[in-house]
Length: 203
Image 1 (cartoon, rainbow, N blue to C red):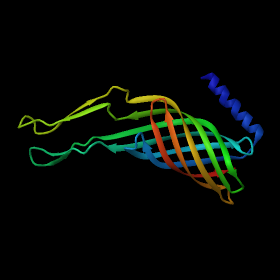
Image 2 (cartoon, one colour):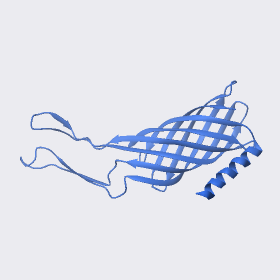
Image 3 (cartoon, rainbow, N blue to C red):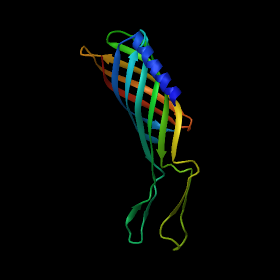
Image 4 (tube, rainbow, N blue to C red):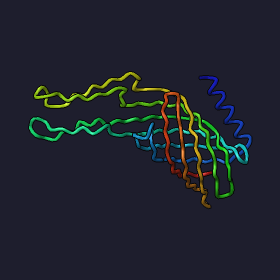
């Protein structure tokens, strides 16, 4: 832990010695988690500081929230009421990262860059590893029975990386508006693909 703090402080002071252009950005986007059956949102706030004409340090905190239903299960109870027994899965996480951004194109008002952001991530999920639905014959049970089994932990800590391609336009008052695409994966085997909008200010 102490080593990582010293590394972070060292990089921060190095960046101070090379450049003074900084920016803060609010990020929000839409995308898919895993194989695409869970759709949802990503969000975050990042701070960047140039340390050369093309390169910048980036620090970010953020998260994601994706959800989706399992196969629909609708049935009637003994009173004839319609019951929705569909299981709804939710996958959410919080993460923080520190990485670099390289500007492929950079002018006074335009920046097209690639960001590589190593991350540490906490995630919680309601997804089960095994699930079965049984319908009884005759009048044994008037409703289906679901068997849910969890093998992997519902809460995980992992490390990974996010790769992004983004474009930002800077207005005359140093406000910035951007769009981008991102892909991230981690040691938990999760993958998130999404698009991002950003609003920020440079100073």
